[in-house]
Amino acid sequence: MARTKDFDEEEVLGKAVCLFWHKGYNGTSMQELVDTLGISRSSLYDTYGDKHTLYVKALQFYQSGSGGQMCNIISNAESAKEAIKKLLEFTTVNLLNDVQQKGCFMVNAEVEVAPHDVEVKALISQNNQLLEDTFCHAIKKGQDSGEINGKQDARALARFIMNVVKGMRVTAKSSTDKAIFDDIINTTLTVFN
Image 1 (tube, rainbow, N blue to C red):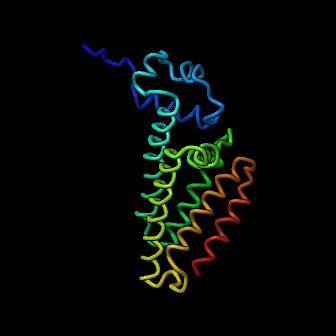
Image 2 (cartoon, rainbow, N blue to C red):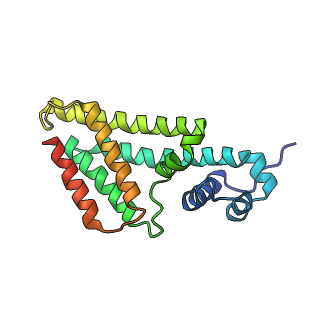
Image 3 (cartoon, rainbow, N blue to C red):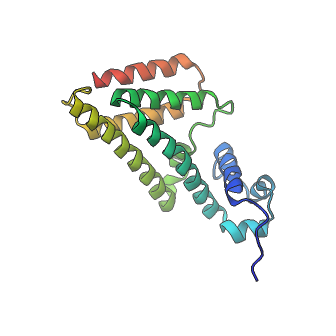
């Protein structure tokens, strides 16, 4: 008969996200995972597999929360320009409130692990494509209504916004000057005039 787990799997995944996010994949040892997650090594292996499998599950867990928030901001805004502005402001607030200046867990994984790991690269690519498609849809909607100039390709603009957001997340690892982020937001919004 299988033993019932005496821990909340989502809570443990949340702790794993925090640890991997703070220390990176390569900087996190199995012993740190056992100590931080508060479960035995055997429970860790039985439930999540090895360190790599846990890392992938942590990325998926993070993606389901943060990606959903971004998509909701874009989908619920009254206009395309408002959606983009709110998303950039949301990104800035989250980054500036992070006293550890960790940046973005997905962007960190894209830089540290994806170049050497096919599974992580595929997960990052899928996440990027979802967000790009969401931006593209909002931009096309704005172009159809005349709010956004239709001379530029919506897909190219969506990719530009994705790059801006990623750049902001990297910048936040070394700067907490809100004026820098305000300048980035204001300059980015001029692209849609």
